[in-house]
View (cartoon, rainbow over the protein chains, first blue to last red):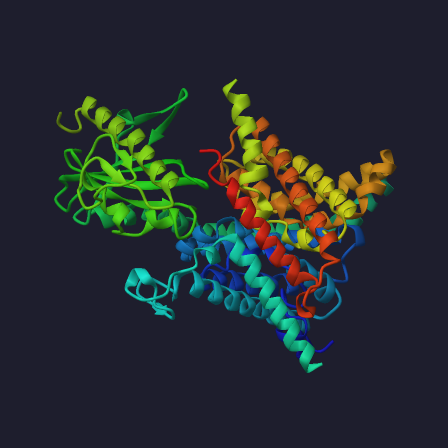
Length: 207
Length: 209
Length: 196
């Protein structure tokens, strides 16, 4: 497996969520706002690269029955670091994402990449794979989050001053009645379902 | 015997070594960031309180002997985090406290402020709320119609009505349409905390009668 | 008496109102992946309930005996996941040795469970909600597992019938399952606010 193939795999051929159907809980839980999705995605990028590199370094020392234990230990350590970093420098986001940051530990994408890629490949390829998979995940999160945030509030909010209004909502004198359901769990399931359907339709035509 | 010990170590040395290594890594990260995290916790309270009491420079916790205990009903009590808002000269210009109670979905945590004599409220800010988006979470809108009803409202018992004039500032609070439970929850939190804190502050001679 | 009531309320709340799958998306992967057949779904649900109860109780004890208030708090997540991974492996070995029939029934799901977010999620939420009573922690852990079982069984029942429906080609499989799940969530929102 070459680094280029790993890179392309993460961003298109095996893009997480859409093709692999892994890591669904954070995908649905944090995509109420683009900023939340972006923070989550970047945390996953960090954890994926670090854990892939470390797992790749010790791949020849792994004992079969302690393997999963080693993976989870590595991942948990890096997730704790990411969690502390967010608490220290992004307190608002950390508060908002709450339990979903520690839950990166059990995000199936990470353990799947440890098992499928890092435990078999060199450090360089594993690092690239981690980066690509993480970025692929981030892109999907941002895409879903922008759909949900626009439909549920009419605008994309990065901070109190940086608000990008797409559909002018009624309470600010516009015409668009926000769909509150999009911010609720219902919106998450249905947006993801329809997006998957659309991806299936598009790729089928190409084939 | 010695063989089984050898086997044990041969199988698990990696796990032990990496546990120690990751432990050290976490300790370093924690040592570097812990003060910042602690500071953020303090800022969270004072930022919200400061938005409501802009003249306050500092929020000082009460002394231990003045600790305020709130009776939550059903025989449960809880210590309330009440702080004195001080201006640059060190004069008390208001009070801020953390109040919590259960809402529609989960716990609601509010930072409530009052003026120096605890006669009128200065409004509240929301520290934690996971109410239904589009309905219950309207309580979080800064200076929205719901929050505005508590600004300058008398510090006493509140009642909730479904119809009324929300512009009139009194102890009658008009509910958010479609989120009566959340509106009631905020009123309940206020009723639990405001009166008791006021009474205890009076007993402790921290404010006038 | 009051305590018994609060236990019962906690149980109902975590099964129906704050159901982990419907309101917190925890356990979505197995919820969509293993819900193809009712018997499989039930087996998975039972295995999860079993491990959740065990892991919830153990992490609560570890939290209150070792971690709370000490500098070791930074290793909380590492401890949790190691406890869960260890518990899963122990349960697997124990069942294989002493209850072969039970192992046949849901043993195959056990290795998958380590990365099931319901379990770690529950441990983290027990900590976030500051549950200070051991019995309450056990009841909530059991309830979370039961909630998951209920959700996955309802889903499996629907999907067995869905197999006979005429679904547009691009929506077959995962997409229609997700949309169904969304509608189920909407239905379960009716329970919200049942307990004040």
